[in-house]
Length: 555
Ligand code: C2O
Ligand code: CU
Image (cartoon, rainbow, N blue to C red; front, side, top):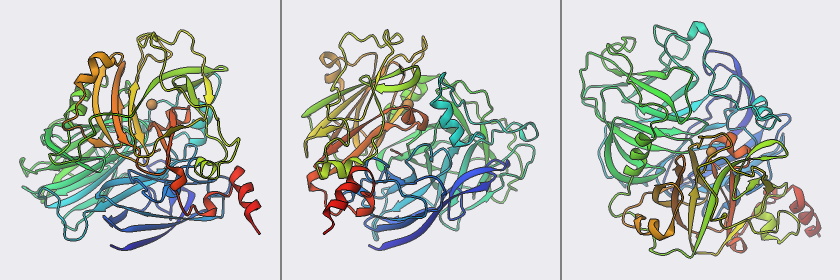
């Protein structure tokens, strides 16, 4: 295994992600940021210099568990102090498990501003994946608003609340049947593939990138998605064999399209077994919210057919945005590959989290058990480790919600409260989380939320409709082959049951991965074994009460 060093600088810069010049948050002059490629067991070192003039910055390595390096998780107010303008912070962590991951900003709405990129971990030297393929292709899906992330942030925290809407439609002259704001970015892995970035080469239909393959070629494709909306990704006339989800192998299954939500990664195998004289559409469309914009399109090109030949049949028709049965069927088919670690049969603790949309002094918020998360100025990791008083709420957040809460109607009392208490988990205990969805503030509205856990993978034991009822639902949980993941969906008016082992000393965010929802308080904080955490770099502590504490330690 190797140590891989990177020197990065973050800065705002002009860029035209969809042919329209805008300001993005880039790394080393690139957007999206550079792809990190490593092998399982390697150590990644990123020296991150903040070149922003007026904002702090952090980078979170999504899906990397950070065993032994919780201070490198890159969550402002949780694992570290934000890196101030001009400062350099060194992230140093091990990538212990092969898989396809990504990284992104974790302060304010810097993810929406464009601070993200791919992190691909290959199997260790001499090891092999349990299947064959001819080449690899990484796909980073993101969406893009013409409104700046600052303006989005102000909209979300205004009274009355202004929803940011869906990604912008491109202006008329580019609108010939394609949605540019849903951007599939491609990076090539092996030379056998070519990918052309032709975003501004406007033809009949805009192709943002071409994936070009020979006939009877089997590429291993890794779609990742990390921003706001929820997407559906079909490849015209081709089946996809899903083999991996969130860095864990799954029981392979064939699908026509992939439901992919913010925070999720998949790996799929495709065979180019169709008529090689034609090209095919790959489309992305919005799920879970009624789209007002056409789907985004790109072309799957069969070499030697010219990449500019348009497919002869129209783009694949996606199931309706609210065809939740389609999405549920997909999620429920994701099961772990035989031989994967099984969940313990019992839990030590079970936390119920009721997801509600609420009001606090007229502002629209999301809350868990009626607490809407607002992060404290002192990062939890140092505050807990050094037992600093007053760094965060000492009250323990609620373990459950009132049994008579009616999830089918808007909250009768929509008022909620801010909080930043933590769920302290016993080291090496088995924790269940039952995520319970409910009706939002508007009648007949319940949204999809993709929940992401830092520092761990969890088993997804099951999904169900209505309110979770231990009497009847416990017996239905899948303890045989539940998938290990780091992100799981809760469907409208339903519940999702997760189980994980609290085996990673540190402080870990657990939150909805839709960035505006997190910004509106949709998250909780778990912590375990913080007394075992060693070597937190001073730089991670140099703010708030931990800064004062450090100063007192000086001789
Ligand atoms: Cu990818 Cu806390 O997020
Ligand atoms: Cu959400």
